[in-house]
Amino acid sequence: MTFSDFFDSLGELEWLAILLGTVAMFVVGWLWYGPLFGRRWAAGNGVTNPGGQMPGPSVLVKGFVQALVINIGIAYFIPALHIVFQNEPSIETLVVSSFVLSFFVIAAAFYASVIYLKRSTTVWAIDSGYYFVGIAVAAFVQDLVA
Image (cartoon, rainbow, N blue to C red; front, top):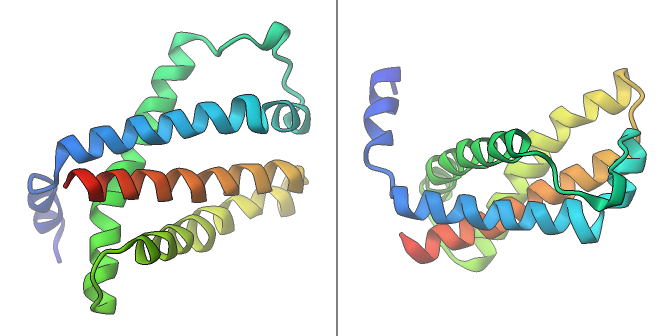
């Protein structure tokens, strides 16, 4: 595959599914870094959030753009896994694909910050868990819509 082939294939993606997956992943992020693990994550990063305020608009926009980019990757990567392993999309294959992407790629890369920057393993676990759940939910939503 060439870069030209890759960019041509982006036009064939289900963009409504990607947008809805992005919204779903953004909502998971709000829950994950808010009521579920927000205080532990903030404490582990030394972040103070007076009165539990929402982040500013620029932070939210940047987070949404990040989720959009991840969802484009999901739309491209997960169907490719189904082709490689010659199986049909199902809840199980979406969860396994999400696990592979989130833990063997994202979490493994994030672990460098624990090793070299001596960051908290709790923060690493919270972030890694978010990517697993967020990617699984986004992939499920994309599969429903596509």
